[in-house]
Each structure stands twice: as structure tokens, then as C-alpha cells.
Length: 282
Image (cartoon, rainbow, N blue to C red; front, side, top):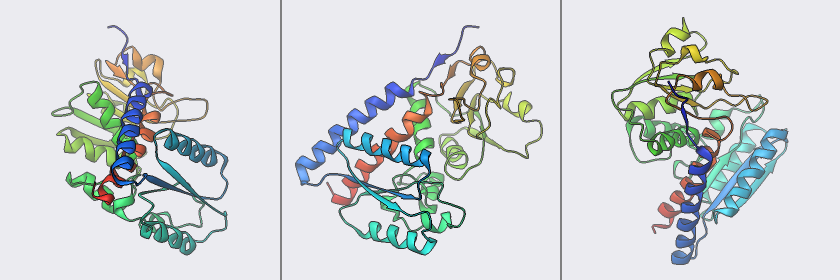
């Protein structure tokens, strides 16, 4: 069997950002309103600071204004909720991104729920998860939404396929499973308590690895011809899938980096412009 084709998230994300920039420019021309994304960061975690700065730069390239709110590491949950409630009520802000992690003293769920659903362009609220689960209008969690767009780009129809999601986080594993289920896949969630993980993964037509453990999924675990989406990112640019061995058996596979990662930010920007469009009634 020949090596798997790479799913190029970088190229697709670039096209999405270009399309988003055109939509943003058109919105501004018609309404005089520039889409605005507010980013909120608690503390000065180096990785988070870098990530937020990258999102701000990408926003500017897409014609989206960026408003950054930097809060001290000692910020309380109530103070953070106050900030997010204020941004939710601000008509000049169309999307809100709360960068996490936020510190163990913060009630993350309470903070996320302070974001108005119509401005939840990162897809982190209970309202957004419900919309994803029921196939209703709303905003997808950005990484799962990016994964679905990547599958569509490579003509992967989940209908009737056995999809195995390794990981059950609230913003990645759980929602991507619901999105796949909504597209008529038969979905199995795996996690740290799953018995004989390899045996379950071997049955999958589509594998989504989203657990944060380097090279957990090995090539021998991959069903020949399966589609492998590696949403893991570990130190040293290592994914959750052993790429070299998995590529020998899969039909399609995402590289790390250059696969899922760029799609996450592209989805965030596209959803910000969509939020601005809805809020302006344009």
C-alpha cells in the first residue's frame, strides 16, 4: 500500500483566511463596521501569550480588529466574569476569546458561561455545545469545526463510517464526536479508562486523536485505508499519532504541525466575521 496522502491544513487555512478577509472588507464597506475580536488572557503564561499574539496578528491580516484584555494572574473568578460580561454587552465587540488555561483558582466553566452565545466564536459555552449536538445554528468549537472542514476538503464523508475519537475534552474530543455523529458517523469515544484501546482504534474508518499523549496511536493500530486526524500537539512538534508508521497504513493523515493547528485559527477568524455579520444584520 502506498503512503497516505497528507491533509494540508496550512494551505486550506490560508484560503479560508483569504475568504474571511474578503467577507470582512465587504461587511465594513457595506455597514462601516469592522469585525472585532476581543481576546482575554489571565496571567502571563508564555505559551498563552505567544498564542494570543499570533491570533491578533492573524486577525489583522483578515481585516478583523483585535482588542486585547490582559488581566493579572491574581484575577478572581468574579472579576473575570465581570470583564466577560462587559465585553458581551459591548456592541463594538463581535467575538470573545478567553484564553485557557486560566489558573487553578478560576472556575473556568463559570467564566466561559459569562460569554454571550452570539459572541462565543471559540465555541466553549454550553449553548454552543448544545447547538453542535442538536445541529442547530451556533458556533462550533474551533478545532472540531476545523477538523470537519478539513474532512470536507478531502471528500471524506463520515456517513456510515466508524469514527473513533481518542479524548473527551469539553472543547475538542466531545464536540468533534457530536459533529461526526451529526454527519451520520457511528462514533466511539475512547479515553484513559478504555480497555484495549488498540483493538477499538483498529476498527475505525476515521480516527481523531485528541488526548495529548505523544505517539499514543501507533501505525499497527490503524486500519488499512483509514483517515487519521491528529489533533494532538506535544513538545517537539509531536502529535498523538506515530506519524511515520501510521502513514504506511492510512489513506489520509494530518501532519503535526501543519494539519489541524492552522485550521483552528482559521475557523476562529471565519466565525468572528460570521458573528459580526449576524450582529449587524448585514
